[in-house]
Length: 384
Ligand code: EPS
Image (cartoon, rainbow, N blue to C red; front, side):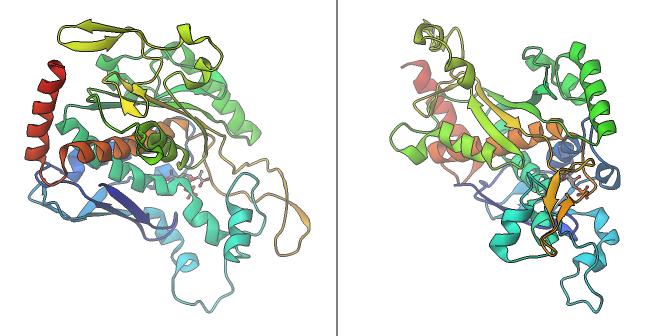
């Protein structure tokens, strides 16, 4: 129902975002509903100098009039301020000069080498410019619209970091303390772990190294019955996992206590059901709010493992793709860690999937129809 596409290079003029299938009648103001999420994505301790250059904001180009969606495709643009420093290198017109800032020493862990071979480039910048995590700003802009839609349906989302650089920082979930996450330099509820994590990031930066971590996207108020058990590609946990794994540097995903559950007997894993008028509830939520690919009505919990960023200032050995000589991997300006930012991206991607499933169940033309049907459905569930 919802289709998201983007275009744009990291150092091109702009990122272009297309979001098709947003129902009519949703109040949407970029400065209120989209830019705060773009701002959150730029934050977090350990980011590089690019985040000082940019102050991302979304310009709505289509699909919204007078602060309301019309039902037409939404188009947005996020300007890359850094483009002015790259205008010649990134120009679409053929240049007179030999190409500048070409990258030929493929970075292990980046898309450089496989992408260069696949698309026939010897200047690996033709790969890295699109593989760059700059593209995640587009995802967050689209995801912010999905979050707005979910909010209108009574669903709230939260993005946080639960482990960074090998140091756990779960700190427990606190729906009443969400502003704390915006104030935390590592987007975590565990203030006690902050100092140690910041010290580890400083050390990694000093060593020319990078750090990964584990992030979480969580939603409450999700109605029971989104997704379906009936076919592999309708299972909502599968759709959430695909969206999470498509994020740059994400190499693992779990729903609820996925990995820990694999080590325990079933009696300690499955969430016992009880009835508390008028709803069926679970005392635990190790399933992460999904059973058989269908939402249970409990909180939906998606966790993802982010590997350390592939650009190392103390580089690993590689090969130059022009000379075929051994070389140090290319150094590009980069972040020591972007784990807090990635939590915002995970929330955005998960929101797109949940919003899609919501439209599937309740219709996709107007917000009025959706909220009416949702209210009737919540009534039905309460009497089941
Ligand atoms: C990023 C923009 C990039 C990087 C980073 C994320 O900008 P630049 O390459 O100009 O520094 O800071 O991307 C990567 C770490 C990567 O490997 O691509 C952003 O907007 O999030």
